[in-house]
Image 1: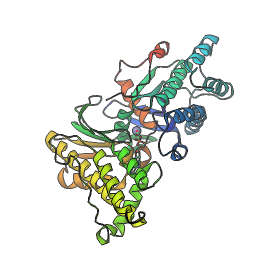
Image 2: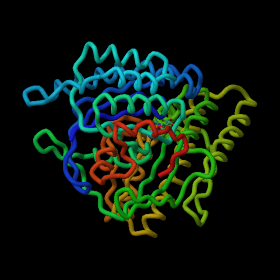
Image 3: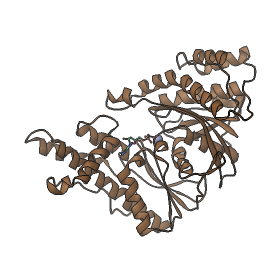
Image 4: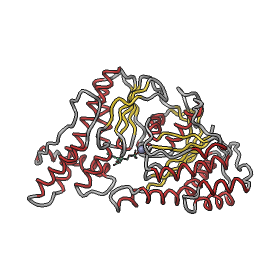
Amino acid sequence: MRILSIETSCDETAVSIIEAQGDIHSPTYRILGNALFSQIDIHTEYGGVFPMLAKREHVKNLVPLLSQANKLAKEALEGSEYNTGIPELTPEKRTLITEILHREEGLSEQIFNFLDTQELLEVDAVAVTEGPGLEPALWVGVSFAKALSIIFDKPLIPVNHMEGHIVSVLMSDGVEKKDHQISPQVSFPALSLLISGGHTELVLSEDWHQYKIIGQTVDDAVGEAFDKVARLLDLPYPGGPKISKLAAESRLHKLKEKAHNWSLPRPMMHSKDFNFSFSGLKTAVLYAVQEKTKSGPLSDDDKKTLSEEFENAVTEVLVHKTKKVIDEYQCNTLIVGGGVIANTYIRSTLKDMIQEHAPHTTLLIPSIDLTTDNSVMIGIAGYLRYISHDPKILQPKDVLSLTAKGNLSL
Ligand code: KG4
Ligand code: ZN
């Protein structure tokens, strides 16, 4: 089946069209069209994501991205048979769509103009992130998806963004079969380590769609800690990639051993539970910076070595707790998802840990381009929900009831 999916939970606006087949334990998929716009440069100026600004950008970009994904998908299907066109857009439907989009200024006009000039590839369902995330940002995607469900006269599948990060590993190391990718097998029990700007969670699953959060951060999320520490070091938003780069330079040239002996805490490393805490670590960086800057501004080497020590501290805690859960619950699979797993040091340390201590556990990590927020993962999650006949799926006549849920949990 073909699914059009939408993601607007934070600062990425994304629309994709995927084709997926197979049952829940052996899905295959093909990405027909994937269009994404990252608002990072816009938010960098303000040092973080501003929900109302994010919302405005989503409103501006959704239709152009739909147009791009639609064009790419038709190109991908060239040579095979496919249908375009939508059921008649009656005046009643137009009124309803205008109503649904009345808070998203100009969006209904953009959609109607688009439909007047371009042919939409037929899809079987629409999937959208309903939460968690920034509520004003989520609403734009949710309203847009409702409108599309009515336009196509096809079901709407609400998707949890964190489930999207989990299933993004189904697109790792895909084996190609004709033009479809075969997803890797996930053997249960599976543990998901979810590390992003808003979440740090250890989630245990006995099967797909069964989630038990057994550990989480009691304060800041890992990505948030990276972003806050970056600010302390005068590095622009988002801090994760910048810190990671400086830390790598420090490691390469062994700067920390040579000169700077920072020593940051490993918070909650040996606590009996599986929870995390990163706010104290950030404060420890603040104190270290304050102490150092008494004798002048931070040097480049200070920033590099402090980044390395911070990254080491975060990684040690994450890897230690993850190992503890794997041991205790005999997990057959470790899934890692969320923007922070773009971090090469955390990736490689996790790989080493699995190789050394849990060789029978399969480690699944999404390819780098699918680690940060995207709509392909929402499409795959939507597909798995659809074939499981999820009761939350809405028929076009019922879509009005769907709301954005900023605090949705797994
Ligand atoms: O999953 P994501 O794209 O958005 C949320 O759902 O939050 O994650 C974004 C987070 C940001 O905090 C960003 O700094 C962090 O992921 N991040 C990284 C790296 N790349 C992105 N953190 C550490 N190292 C990286 N290379
Ligand atoms: Zn995310």
